Length: 333
Length: 267
View: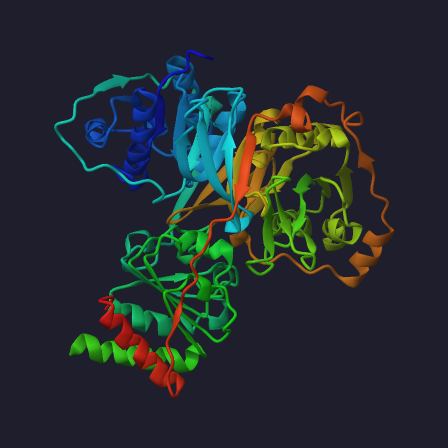
């Protein structure tokens, strides 16, 4: 176990490109590797990976393990866990990082159990303990009401998943040098027990929540799906994306893909306008990276006012149309 | 007809207002204020609902299993009052101080004791520690496939069809049974127990199993079986200095807010 060395990140590829989480993991992983004086490697799993390994090097990897196989085109629990198990056993990394994404939150626990080690999910901060040299894994607990710092003392590798946007990517440097190692997936198709029969995109039209610089979000207090159309009008003026807290999604007022929060999208816009949003911790966990939160809520005691920079205590039905009108005038003039 | 197992956890109500939870540094625990009630973790209630929807059309049997202590019987019997057939409680000093690893181990051993199962349901994560590992861990320990973060589950003969939530929609997955599925909030509201169900649940005898009852290896249980250590819990300090924008009327306040945002170069 003392032989485990190096920080390894498990990258993600979406539509033939490195997903943003990959560069974030490389940025966070680079700092840990430098602190430990160890190597930073990236694992890229997929089909038709091409030049992406070079890109991972430009974002900070010293070494990239490429596992390219048609069987790996889509994420499947069985195939990806098997590939990661194989690589970890061959390379014996000290630390393995993944994204807290549809892939990472499924892969990390199963991999940790298979390797008889531990993982911390949805970490917001990772650092190296100066004495023990172990990974300190800090994550939100109780729906964001508190934070916990964990350490895995007895087993290796130390595995953690990292929340989107929690780590800063490094600038891309195409002059960086690194090594690319191809690894055979060695998969037996019969061991993949799940079949994906369909993929359905529910992405809301327009700008993606994760990429938006301005977001207008409605909460339970909106009262209906129709009421979200008023948010659409404001969003259109501002070039903003429209988000939702959990209750409107669970009630079927808006698609689940609009949910911002612990179990939804993680966003970090410059401007986040929260309308009839109470500010439950589970929701704030998804938008705490917003630089300026604006609250419109009729309950002066609502938690959202503890998080907001500017707020209005009032009924959104009266406030929102007037606000939208004034914004329209200001932007026109 | 499918045999189904649902793992449920009793926790302090996560919907309690922010500020209801405080950190007890000495005990290294998060404690809920006195008024916060105990509930079945909401994702676990939705897991019960997923099983019930299958039972509605296909029949079958649902056994709920809960590992914990200080059970409030009216609360933990909710899976029964909603329509589950059996409930088993796992309670033993040997289970305490567990992490995801030793929790999954105890539940896997209890599931083996229950015996036959086609589908095991868990919530995607317990809404207290939000670890999100126990479901996958049980599947790994039992050597069965798993599908996580599901919003719809249909039972077909010998297999299930699952809608798994992804970042931009969902994927439809088919998998043979036995299988473990974790359920997400997108499944929708769980049903309310009916009076008849509540009455029946109140009368129902609920067995409690100990470590010995499930034939567990003591070295893998509770604190002894952990792989990770919680060093400390803390609450970040929030600045909380919101500038409330006023006006003679809500409309005027709204206009003032727009002007304020322009001033702050946010518009």
